[in-house]
Structures are given as C-alpha cells and as structure tokens.
Length: 510
Image (cartoon, rainbow, N blue to C red):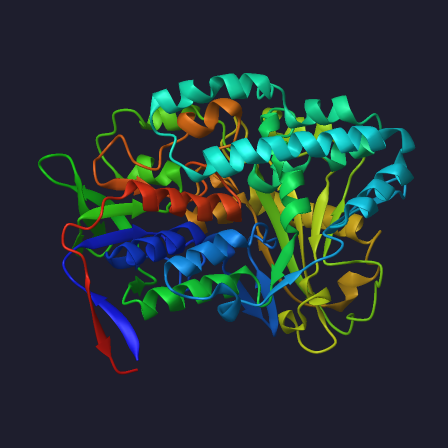
C-alpha cells in the first residue's frame, strides 16, 4: 500500500534539480500537495545523466559529502536513504598531480594526510594541523549554523559580523592557505575547493576552508548509478508520497495576485497552475530575470552586476577495452597545468580562454562498473573556463574543436592512447549550460560565493519580490554544491508556513 496525499494546500516547485526535489520532499512532509515542473526529460537538473553506446555520462556533480543531510531529508519523509541509495566511501578521495611529476592523495585518515603533507614538505605538517583546526571552527559556524538557517534578515547578518571578523572572513581561501603552507603545491591542494562550487579561490572568503573539515569528518562518497540515481530515488519518494512531477514542461512565468503574492505559474503552452506557494529551483538569474515581472530589488541591472561563477567545458567519452589499463588513474584526478593563480585570474577576472588549463578527470568505472559495458571505461574531463558574460565571450561553436584537441593533449600524459579507443562522446560548453539549464551567462554554479555575495547578500530563500515565493538551489543561500542545495531545502522547510489546509492522507492499492 502507498500513502497518497490529497488536499487543497498546493505548492508548485519550478525545477527538478536536487534542490527542487529536496524542497518537494520537505513540503510533502509538512502536508502540502506538491507539483514539480521541469523542462528536461529526467529529474536531477545538473545531476542528471545521459547514455550513449552503453556508457552513462554523469552530467554534473560526482562527489557526495555530508551524506547525513540526505539521511535527514529521507527521515523527514519516513524513508531510509541507505535502503534507496547505495553510497560508497572513497579512499583516496582524489589525487592531485602537478607537471613536475609530483602528486598528493587526499585521504580519510588523518595520519595518512600528515604523511602526505610531510612527503611533499616536512616543514608544513604543523601548518596543516593548524589549518585543520581552523577549518573545523569555520565548519561549526559557517555550515552547521549559518548554512542551515535563513539569512534573509539584515539583523541576522549584523549579529554574525563579529564572528566573521574574528575568523578573518575578509581573507581569501588562497591567502589563508598561503599563511599555513609554504609549499606552493600544498597551497593549491588546500585552497582549490571553491572551484567545486564556482568560486575563485583568490577572492572567495576563507570561510570555505571548512570543506577540508567536511572531507575529513564525513568522507567523500560516490552514489552507485551516479548522482542521477539519487535524483531518481528522490523522484520515487515524491511520487510515493502523492507528489506529481511533470517533466518536459517549461514554466514561462510566475503568476502573482492583486496583492502581489505568488499564486502559481504559467506554463510555456499557456496552461496556468494555481498554488498557495511557489518554490523556484531555477537559476536565480532566470527566476528574477525572466520568470517574475516587476522586480524591485533583484532587477535585471542588479542581477547583471553580480559576479557569476565560471563556465565549464566538459568532454564525456567512453573507451573500449580499457578497464584494466591505466591502473594508476583512480576515480577522481586533478591534473594541474603550469599555472594556478594566473589561470584562475584569466578565467574569473579577465574572461580569457587561456592556452594552458587544469583538468578534473572523472573515471566512475573504477568504483561503478555499471557506467560502461563490461571491460570498457567511462570518463569525463572538466576544464574551468570563462562564463559568457565577459566583454568578449568565447564563441564555442568555433572554438570547441580546437579546445578539445588541447584537452586531449593534456590527457595523453595520463591515459596515453585513449583517443584511439573512444566509442562514444559528448561535449558541454557554457553555451550548453545556458541552453539546457537556463543558467545566466552559461555559468556552471550560478552566483559566485564571494563574501559580499554570500548569506544576506545572496538572493534570499524567502523572496522580497513576492510573498509566497521561495528560492532553493545553487543561486540562493547557502550556495552551490550538493550540501548547499540540499541545505537550502532544509532552510525552506523552516520558512514555509504550515499549510492552511493540510493534505489528508488516504490509502490506495499499489
């Protein structure tokens, strides 16, 4: 028997990304009747997947940290996350390689990490110990406190300013790492994490060193079947609780009543769906730039003045008969180019497509054989690149073939001969992120998490533009990344009022 919710208190969720799906689960748990609307043909948003020639290409996030957030979400719906999703811990988490042949493996064990730091730079072990303590303090404050409650009131910001000052939130992640490590390789290894959520390590607040504590405390995991398997499990939970998910259906406008309150959505085909509240998991730039007319604070000019995360060039490819080849290449590898700060500056500040690059190589078949036919491999190579909002944006229709050759040349140093074995491939550029996800400027992670674009300075979870409108996902508080978007739905659960007319459960035969 399945429990199906019915009743008039209705919430429409725009977007079936991980944030939107988590929001739907939270709303169903509160007693709302929920309809999720998404323009794609499968749930997951950036966390969806496509198949080619038997190869599963995980289009977006690949790393799961803080799995307790998912367990708490499932528990709120009376379900068991671990019964629905097969999560595997990874060790090492990832390997970082430099052009000089040196490498660094991030591990779960603290002693192993000390040994890795000491192997590269014995004099930096003490700095590592201090860095870890500082990362934990920022985790307690920035993640467990600020990241799990709304920051839409100015008084909330004022109250935490002394803590920001004490923890030197004005200092960048890279600047903080440089104060704790003398070796440039370790400075990079302990400062690059903001790139995972679209931030420039040389400008993003040092609060984000908390990621080092996240990794140490909770580990790095991979969901068998990819993040798309988590999205499908979320969709199953939503439907099982009586929620509706309408795929291949685009929202054209958020509707407001005479009082200015959100009252539903108009679909691209003209159909109007009435609701008591609206939750947007769409990119914040699209929500306020296209879906909602008559903005007062988040006008097109204001949104256009924000600094946006970098774009992404991602080359997905499947290779035949290579499962036993390249035995030293693990699940996650970061392959550095010759520059760090200069390359980041080209990407974020100058908006210039540099000749050199650094790559993240994902090889899920190391952990999950289902990502490829037997004996084969599936990969993706990701390169951070400028978004499309700079003065002279890259024309990717012209540039992509040449850029792919440069990516291939760098990959040949690690997986020699791979091009001769490719049997399926797919490419995404910032233009594809713009068109597929309606992401402003084709940015990979919405608004960049600089200090004056975080917490209260970000588009709020409860909209100032229309009562009854709420935001979740990467473009709102607390930010991008799986922990961020799932936490945004937890914040939503605290903000949304109890339904005026709660849904009444009824039982129906399977």
